[in-house]
Length: 412
Image: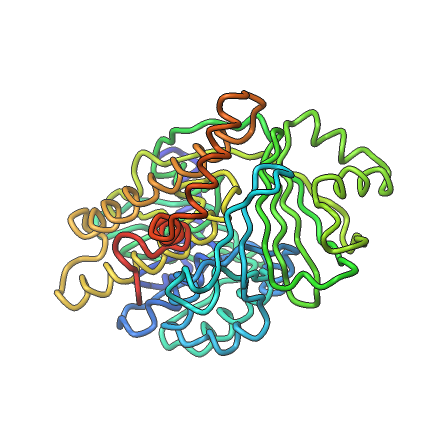
């Protein structure tokens, strides 16, 4: 313990110490899914978030939301609130650039009523926040900074600061749901493997002149995947991946030139396109933590792993992490096991880390196999598309992996 930490603890020693069983750092979709999934566990849960509740909802983004994530929300009891405000994909069309042969997935290939869903961040998070406010023994710390973390013989001690006031929170289990730059992962000294891709991702929202007909597209251009996600109000979110220099050049173009380049990849099936929101750009990387747990610590979502946006897997992996960890902790509570012990937390790590490896490998392979001009590979993947389209069992198996219905199902 260094001198600054001693001083900090001395400053807070006169403050009352609160106690909780589980402290979740991060009140995004994954963090609140975990908190809500623990509602019947009998455990005291605290959620710590640096932003205000309003700002956490205001993130302007939409996601490809999987049927397994929908099943988890059904188990939480909030699907009736969410379902009417998201798009139920009735077709997902995957093609090699503008090649006219494609793989089409329909609800008949899926165990549920939609292939996938188009879900806006605010819709999902507001539903979770609404449920969370009515959960007994769930405490929220919004606009609160995690100043310091100290491990003690009886658990973990967190120093929190809100509006200039500090307080101490003691917890048995600290969960990092705080994103790819996780402070919890860094504190735990957990190393990661992976690499930055040569690509950046551009996102924007468009209004097509014609109906999107609840159809999503994933077009594999040589520069990178180009996805079109239908969302309510006959809008579409574009997720456009391109090499860094190309993406930066696109972002620097005036709107009419940017839209001309976008239309070339988008196609004319939906008529004229109107940009509703300025484009945003972010780098893309693959990351897998060497460990998801340490004594008294667990990681979920982007704190544990990050993947390429192809296939829309990132958020859905995190939601399954949260549901799986909740299930493990509830079982441990029933068995009167200590929720911070490694023999409990290892069950979560073995479950989710192994299954996440499959998704990370799949998204990496898809991106590398299609983001190139190599002629033999071009013909091979187009033959592969024909085989998948005409082999129903293979198509359904691929869809089970993409939608989260493979492996253990983390139903809460």
